[in-house]
Image 1: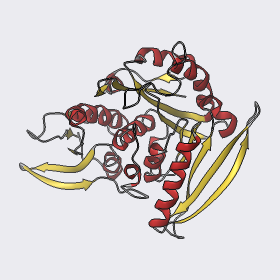
Image 2: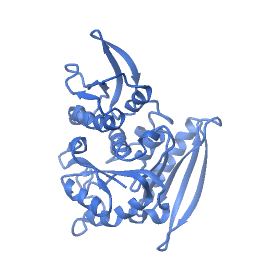
Image 3: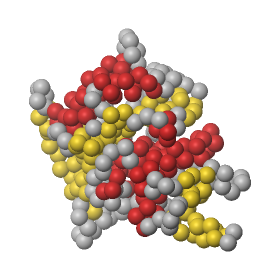
Image 4: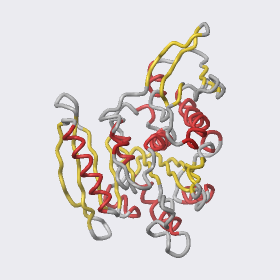
Length: 334
């Protein structure tokens, strides 16, 4: 498997290790007898895969949705024969990457985050079907655009109405430019504990021959997720948590509060997120491990009732991003 080249040199240097961890958790589900070799072709970012028997088309298709997959080749008689390329995007390959803003998380990493959630739960066999994904702190919706390219229904919530407006404006322009059939509806969801959550929903498809998918944006506090979104509504949750620093090294909003503000938020939010998941669903959270320890987040997730994934590839996602950020992923299953 030839790996996708990354513009960030430090991330590129970590890519083989991160790709191997992601591939291992996929193969543990798809083909448990398969092995991975990180010493493939010298001076070329790639992984070697060895199967006890030829993998079927469903295994190949799943590997093509690996976040760092660039091309898949079969070695035969010392030569490489092309087998498959990266899975085709359902909306547009450039959809998650066009909108630029300070502090944006790379869309390749977010696809890894989504895959971590998918292969922790019970719905990985249904990846070709329209699963329902939630990002409860979605910002400008990059994770939702990754899910849309998988053909899924995506819902994002955030308290920042300006970020939501930017995401809405961009997605509408994108659908119009690419001549997608689409409709936009607005509503307000009533919350059980009082108040309401303004909603903007896109229903879209390339043409009238394909069932429409939905992308929904809500202005909603992360700690009130299931109040507005319902119980057992989502197959998976993927969320890149606030890092506590911006890329200009200034504290993020909320970081000036006393104590660990993120821990307090997660104590209130995680039970809500678990309630919003279907049984067998899963949540994957990425975060800055320099300001919030991995084991502490795993403990909070366990206290909220999740089965926490640990050991093996689940411990292989920590990586350096910049001086103030070492990113890691924690995953839990309902």
